[in-house]
Image: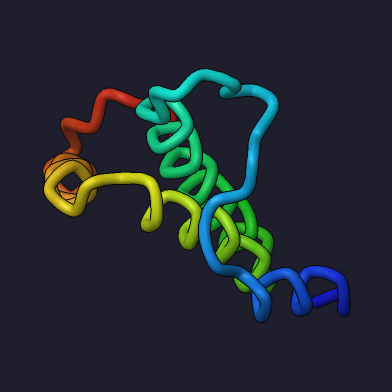
Length: 86
């Protein structure tokens, strides 16, 4: 993993500004980072690569999303009923 990514993960405190989501309501930002984490993990796992770079998305969605939402989405993923495309 590159030194830049390692440094960003080490200094991570909370979700940084994302120009794709300029509004106060961060619901879409939360959901998109949840999707990005699972897409990244799936893609790198299929290639047999380390999934450490995906930790960034996980940290962002964990800081933005309510725990109950994440638990619900995880349950839906396990049951095969998750509405997002991963």
